Length: 269
Image (tube, rainbow, N blue to C red):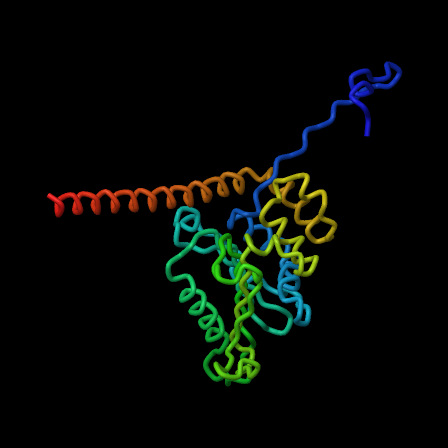
């Protein structure tokens, strides 16, 4: 590293060149940016899936089944921008970055996985053609707060009294609680690299410490994607929509508290 004195007194015999500022990037924490990146580069999505399902056989993403992002998706606070993909064996994966707490999120996810399973069959096909339907949710909040030392969850159909007995693999759900997960050094290194990237890709110092090649590739693509003005503006619109949704929820809570206080005052008088 150069000392400040050397930097302030360049060699006059050397032609100095101004260093171009590093291009800004897009936050991968934004669910629209998340969907755009992994829809464009399915090899990166496959690595993310394999990092999360590190105990399972690796998969290759063959098809993105829902690559389109509709204009109404940007403004709606209830829309979840998931990515539905199919691997070489026909398994379906629904991958999402979930930024907000939704009251019926669990029901919604179970319904989505079951629907993805049912949609595989057409008239005339029998059940042997069914391939597993697997949900993967990356949560921006902690769902299971009573378990501070566990952040990666894998749910299947299992017997209540004998949980080692599994009723097939047709329906599965993986959940990663990102706030807890980044603090658990016991997770596999590739998964920790992705978690750090998902949470802090705009933190240059944190990103410089990551060596996992697919994450390095993702960071490079994000810098390039920033030059896409339409994408950049859409990402900003999506972020503002979520902020507005939180503000509206906060206002509703405030108004509810005010009404409660007025009723309490009226009863006291």
